[in-house]
Image 1: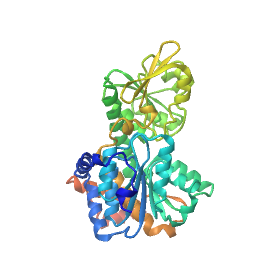
Image 2: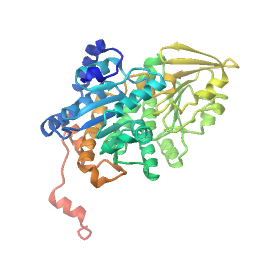
Image 3: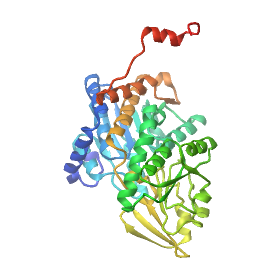
Length: 420
């Protein structure tokens, strides 16, 4: 059965537009292009099956093509129902990749597509948020025997994987790509910062300057969102549960307060925590009329929708990807993209040049885990620093930039305790 016969997509006739999108990002991902050249020569995945669950848009599609160029048979599904782009899915099928994904499937169909991806019996996995690995360990344990290992993209996914490792459930090694320097310093900070505001701005068509933006969580993603909000002219408030991060936000020039206090003054809210219910009933009670709510965490649980529904007397779609909730007292709140990832569900995700580095790490980490899965064991491991640095060097070279190297004398000086 060929990829067209196996795949489940919305409409194969959409492929031409998808090809154009993939060609565009291909031209702006020089690091991944360099890795593709290596993979084509070395064929590190020859004879292996790779299952991928990521936000299925053009940049992800190009990663899938790079893995295929390394000799793999690739099957892919989306990691979020609203971030899948049907034209990109169709293009991938034409490129010989099996695709199980549609934009906005219902929850049952979304799960079925994920299971279909696992039923290709993968040797290696690339996951985003842990859904693929979780389903494999809970619903399709019969497919575990072939899996050598994989790589995880997100903070949320790594939290789930570490919980599995802690209780002894994890049955193969996973590389924590999210924790690599070239991931969180650039993807989480600059990628999330820009793409979140791309999504909010294109969806609302409202000015940010002069407004009060509440950023919930000051990890690397929260830092990027706050920095970009400040650059757009907003007054920025950060809420945190970590005192050290709270001080850091304060030192970075932002107001810091509890969510209950911030809820009273915010115009825009962006949650970036990876936890649930960080905006909930007690906050809705004090929010201003017209507050705009959005989430940049992986799952749609950070903004509590059931409690918002319970407080509302009506709900309607007022713009594409914006739902208006009217409360009993007449106040109206606006939720973007159903509380799902605003940068992908209401935008195109991170810039191509940012994902170039992240997906280079994914590709190299997948090769690393395939080469070393027996030695690693059933645990979550960090990306080796050598791979992290190599991605950074490839990036600098693509920019036409060079850096210095230590002389032998300098190396000796740094390694000595007697010559100072």
